[in-house]
Length: 87
Image (cartoon, rainbow, N blue to C red; front, side, top):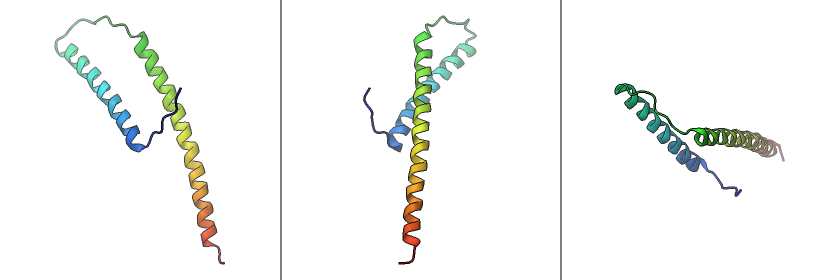
């Protein structure tokens, strides 16, 4: 696997893509509901696996961000403490 840098804009772009997929699923549900269609048979194993992998990926990303926030805050406080000391 290759690590890719994700800045806030990249994260937003990915989240909007996921939201677009969610909107399409909701549209299908609404059409089926409005047309009172019987349940449709779909192969969902791969989609559910991908969702599980996305959930795992996001958990790791959240952990990494939390770790970096703690380090960043600590470094910032150390700099503030250094600059606040009388010379």
